[in-house]
Image (cartoon, rainbow, N blue to C red):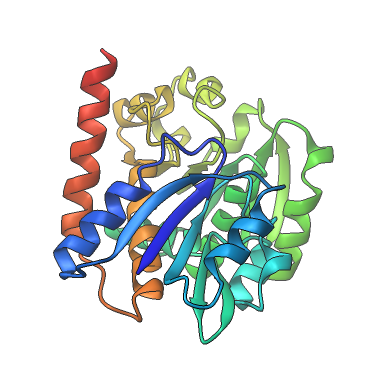
Length: 281
């Protein structure tokens, strides 16, 4: 069986390392996983070719900019993916293209792993697709309100629509507003590396320090935000944990609910990150 991750750019993706390690640990001989460079214009043709009868494809992982673009191509969209407005997983099953969002489950699992299954308050940096998944993850933990810090409130319309579908109340703040951190249990940064440096440069202390800082960036690591949070005493979660846990759910969906060998996936992924870090020095 075949699977792949699609996106543009895609050469940097760690997904092939994680999924191949999972196949090896699970004894799935003959399974393969590759990275395919694909933009929005090319997506329909790639999906059609993979889903053709006899093609032998189990599924596809989808990264930016394809999570929203894939929705019209699906025969079935899981309700959570519909609410979030994006699917990062396409499974070929029973002659259908079935779409799921595993980012939400990945975030929930990463939070639970550090002992924060139910934050009392949270602030999200950014308003893109990952921020929408973060809102859904917060709802899964029982939180029904969140502060969202954005650079441009006029570009947060999609996130507002997602919040309404999820039943989560959102308070928008400018990204440069220092007060958005005060008294928050959890900070989730969904912005690119460097965009959260403003928060990293602040002197965090006492009630200004979130209990947990979740930065979805995984390379380069640690980010300035992660270093500042750790120095202030916060528990830090890296984007690698999100990638790992969402990939585990993808593995289960694509293999007919086989349990994901997370330990083997974690070891392989961390080894590859260490290799890349050493090579870049």
